[in-house]
Image (cartoon, rainbow, N blue to C red; front, top):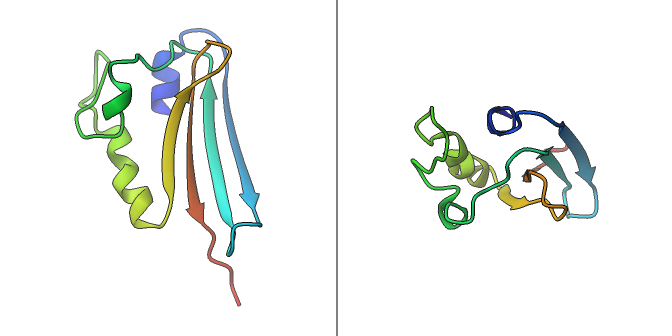
Length: 99
């Protein structure tokens, strides 16, 4: 969310969460889509590594949360939007269903 706000000077930010039941035990998918400047190509290969940043402030630790998501059985990815306006960051986490 912080990156979406930082890189979207004007436009919209949409947060979406949905449950996918057809994935075994189920997953939640959370996406943050913005109409900001998008992800610059040179940072894309190292986007989820420590200290990766194109911001004037911050240390590049925010997206390093990949290891936390993966430790919980999830996955995270990002892509520039196909319309050329902004980017979408998404992650999944497995659902723990009560018996």
